[in-house]
Image (cartoon, rainbow over all chains, first blue to last red; front, side, top):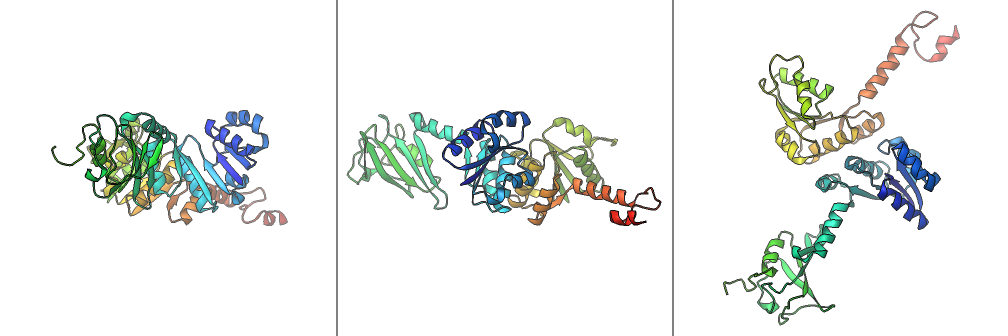
Length: 227
Length: 158
């Protein structure tokens, strides 16, 4: 594949290096002269100097024949627009944009820039996964399908431990799809009794996270009455 | 008409003053609180006293745009000092807030042209300068008398 990477920061430089090692053809574009000269010592002709916001810079890099454009500069507007012209003007099939400020993510979506990757989001997700106090981990958003899959770890104090799955008052539009216990996964049935330490996966309509958190969290009321 | 101007530099502030004096409602948004002073250049009263609005914030911040009144804007002018910012916020104004009249200042002629073709109303000061300079050269006097006129060949034919 011919891949254009824009922005020779830590992300772009390492990305370009990895892609070259995988035998892809790569052009890395950098607009800061000093940074360009540093990176050029290693990547030589694979790095090009210029502001990729400008169309002629992209054209000089051969964007017309690029299979993929990856914009990973430190500037969200740059990343958005480079990907926008790559796709809409030059009809590049695949684009990837980096989101620096997660608050700009809706703007990427509005302009139809997909996928967009935010390091902050990735780390937050890892954090949620590693720190059980968060309780509920987002595993997957099926945006088109309007569904989410989440994971919950049941603590000793969870309101649902020791209860039959069939007795739980699951919010409408949610379903338990699997239980991980002692390293093994199975699909729960009505008679399955939940235990502390179980990791349960649920699929749900977006917006039901809070109800599930309440149900499965500490002191949660698994039966839905005041028992 | 309610006009929202993002980027209160020399251009933005001048347009803001002109629109306000013509009786329109004008709101300015700029990251730099100091840019407020530019609005009052040549005015004998304060910007707010004259009915103007000024908000400090970045054009990419949704909260700032809403505070500055984008939801009721009839016209939106993107005149920050960054082409990329202007192009992005103009699209936000168009697509998300459905502002009827969105105008973006884009210095880079190539991109101004392309986005214009995509349906964005763009103003390219660089293009204007290029055209004016070309005209000034061609219409100015030349050594062999008269104006330089049309293509170079005709001037040399003699």
